[in-house]
Length: 108
Image 1: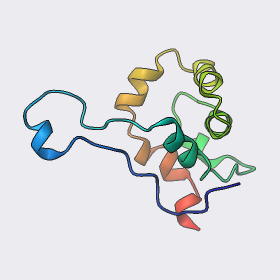
Image 2 (image 1 turned 90 degrees about the horizontal axis):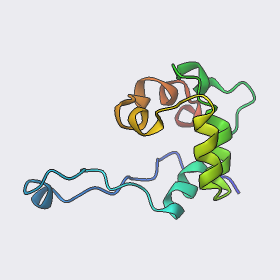
Image 3 (image 1 turned 180 degrees about the horizontal axis):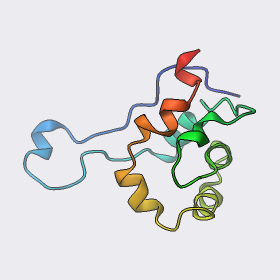
């Protein structure tokens, strides 16, 4: 069942008092269940506007659908079909000005 919330699932982060004392990642990442919940927000649009904003042509709706089905390894391989460096892209990609900018989910 789709998650009809307009709000994204909040990314867990280190508390400010903790992160001032280390060089670890601030964003702690989603749990599997959080990833599924966020993936279920995808509307699976017919024209896939999110892909217009992806410079490496990742099949965004396809990998999101796999995450929603808890097929995490298959989702990884789907991303790898068009992107040989997904970890690097995931770190440096300004998704808010690319795929997310074109997404109609927050504009409904």
